[in-house]
Image: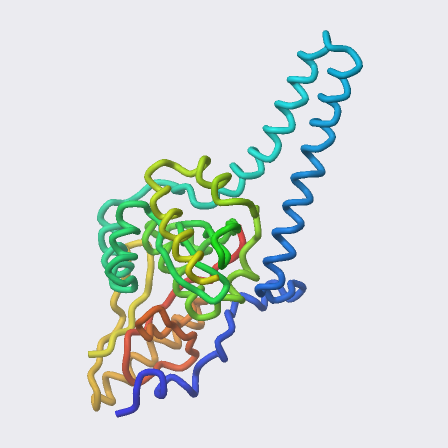
Length: 224
Length: 73
């Protein structure tokens, strides 16, 4: 009897995600693209923060009594990157109502797809851990975090199943299967929302999700 | 036992099951598979150990999962 893989060979889609046809203008995401994205976000953050920090320093130097304005400028310098990080982390927040019965069924299938440790982690944090070539992924209902090898950068992707009636675990399973079939294609189809240091993402994550990020960062460090 | 399942609002639905050598069962499953592809579903063969493959024809054995397309949010 042929193995499932051999039996499927005639009909397989050459490991590419079919959804790539919907975004033909996008270049396939690879490790180099991730580095460029990290640099762009670092530059973007500096470009937003540095003028406020400079203005605060200059104002205070010219007129010490203007320090309240300087403080306001520093607050802006701090808040803008925080808002970007919050936008990035929003991709993994739970979405929509849950049908308990459907969710139980979906959770069973998702559990079958995950190994023992990722299954336990997913049940406690809502995030499914998946090791890939681009880094370590944490897959949620409508988005995913990718911790790049080395564990120093987290990329936030917004991506979801087009069927909005699915229970949460099925939404995760949709993304997980797409990711497993074509990791680069998955990252290409998804919308990149943010890239930054793990600590910036962590402080915006709901507390119950933070252990998953810690595990993913640890795994990514070992990938370096 | 091979299975064809579709992820849907109920969690998932088993559309067909067949065993090795059961050609009639396989053919019925293949018809159901093609119907779901025509409705826009995507077939994925779960290969275990973190691997999966998109399929356009139903494999003779394995767990085949039908999923909806995904898109950037």
